Picture (spheres, rainbow, N blue to C red):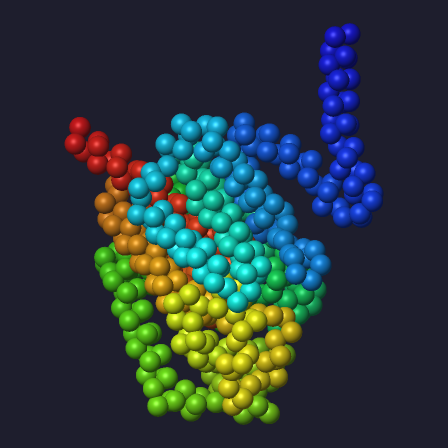
Length: 479
């Protein structure tokens, strides 16, 4: 009798709690109001177990889709909602479970550099040419950093947790890869149909292939760490082959290049020249840009407007690429030149985070105009480093490059100091993924997306966690 009374009270309480949300949904027709009570329930569950929310977030990333609320508001659902939840849990922890915050080494240089990078974003947003857009950008960047960099540092303490996260993400992405391959197979794996196959989970084949290629180092690490299980290793080989096949049919040149640079990262870190090579690459790239700009040498790469078209056949697409007759390549030149010409206008603070699209067209040159220069999809510069310097000025780019240099420095340092094979393989995977991300972002702007931005900050968090193991091994040696 008493149990029935408790059930009745509980049911009544839940009903009273849900009723206002149902009424608002009925009046507005906005289904998002039906999600809010579940967010509260998830917050309660997450307060009991941080790892549950984080695992749910990690598993949801490959499956999330972009949902628009009007013309100016969009959200990646459900992962961005879970990012907000993770951020709320983290902030609540700082206030109500202050002891937990001691689990984070706030003095770690990677956290300081990430904080400096974010602080500059906040500053440049206040000088933006469109404050509302920059504010949205800054808020989104904030919950990316909290959810993927800071939040996992509260509870990830051992190998089992790390394995569970890597395996959950990898399997989730692999399952959706099989779904996309099946959809694409029904269209005979045609190049012109790949974007249809990846929707609604990915915006386009570039986002899909970028995330897919970044999963390869994880599968490779699993293969190397499973020395005692021959059957499992064979299955991992099958998975890797399927992923490579999926990358071929994703038709993304940037992802193919990322496979090569990711493999090179394995060699560079073993020879202790990873971060040094990165710095040298920055200097050479900077020198090349100045050489192109001096005496207007870049004008020699202007294309013929009439012959620069989109090719539906991939062989023609590749041929047009190296002939500079592919519309996507030509339009990249158009955006890159506009970006370089924008820099002198606001060299210190840029035009504002997220506002490149609103500002670049007046800086483009008619000789580089293409059939898609009207930019109806409102895409950006297709080079993340140029995007940073135009939107956040020279300091914004410098702070980001400083963060990347530190990432590669610590990856190289930890790899050669660690004795535990698991953590050494984890470092190799992290370094390879970060090099892949950099490669992809020379041709795209993916760090602001949920698919790649999540991996970027997770890799930094992984290095900080690996640093804890370095300290443990150092103490054991002393003892």
